[in-house]
Length: 326
Image (cartoon, rainbow, N blue to C red; front, side):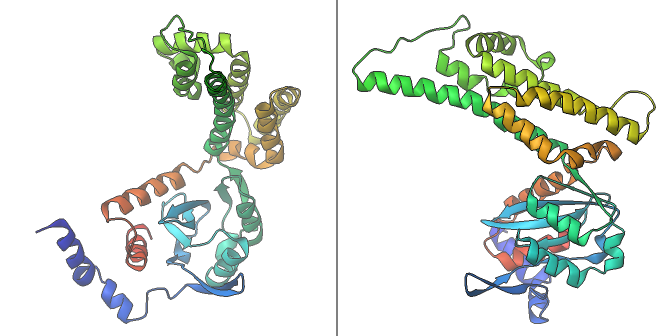
């Protein structure tokens, strides 16, 4: 039997979707709101109070061009809420309606990214929870700043070549000792900037040496990013959370004071990010909590989309998501 025919048969006969449609179960938790003067329907395919737990994670996922907020239990990896909105006011409306305050008060930690909407939402609906900004989002943000410096230099090199051609001049083609041109060096160095020096291959070591010789600003930024990554390492031996937090705060303050004196804009941007989210970043050292499970859930959702011919039939897709992830 052809795969698509089997898929249609499963959808119409075995999945229970048709019966759920007939019984009015599809979209029963959706809300209607006015946006730009028009009545808009916001899909809320999953609302499962029993999946609220002590440790929760909140993240976003784009499906077929629509951004969904996903609130999941970090211990069970089950979805408690999935709603097609990122707006705090709508999320608060859904959560306060469907989740009892007693259950919400039991949430003790909320791991998230640096989005301000999730910060405010967490404060309003999970009043007893401390927030942990995901370590991997922080590192990703730093890496974007580091790569921005490399990209800036590459764009400058491309601009020089373009202007030389426009002026009918010959631009000198420099071949480096490893066989790279300057443009190739800047393009091929992307990967090595993500990893520490002790994990570089011999080719990467050679390329990094050339990159840092030609662009000392990239070297400075790279070393500072590595300092922050080492800062995230938990202390060795027995210690208390309070001692760890106090020590890490002092270490971070010293690092950031140095960062803010930098003439490299991207380094100053990193310092600003940390200073703006200091408390929530330090909360990582309470239980070493991250959004890793929420990110894994996102990847599982993406695989689910890929094996189900996408998400063009939105209602059926969301029904299937509820069955599999809640």
